[in-house]
Length: 119
Image 1 (cartoon, rainbow, N blue to C red):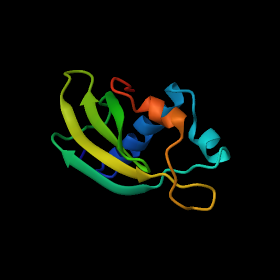
Image 2: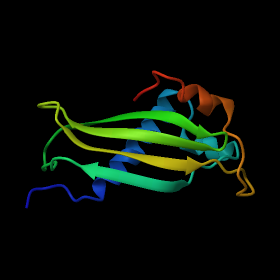
Image 3: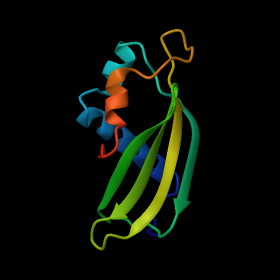
Image 4: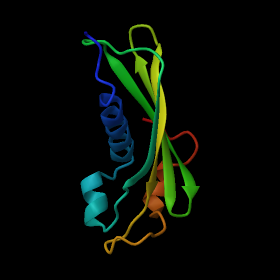
């Protein structure tokens, strides 16, 4: 059909989230080595227009604190050729320590979530 499979958008959200943290100087691997994990506890995607194969897209990502132990990432999937927003959504994450218990977000993640931080 030439249309991108719907589940790929959630993969693109993950790419945006990973890039945002990497730009802040903290990779997922380093985060896990430091004893933190951010499992997804909620996800939502609103499909507005289909992405087609060979479309160049940009994933716009920003994060915000939802609580002391939860964070929310918001995403827009934008076609670069015309600036159309193809999809928008969010994911909510819990912060867990090495023992898989909820814990406060580390300061370096809080810094990424300051207003204006975007990938």
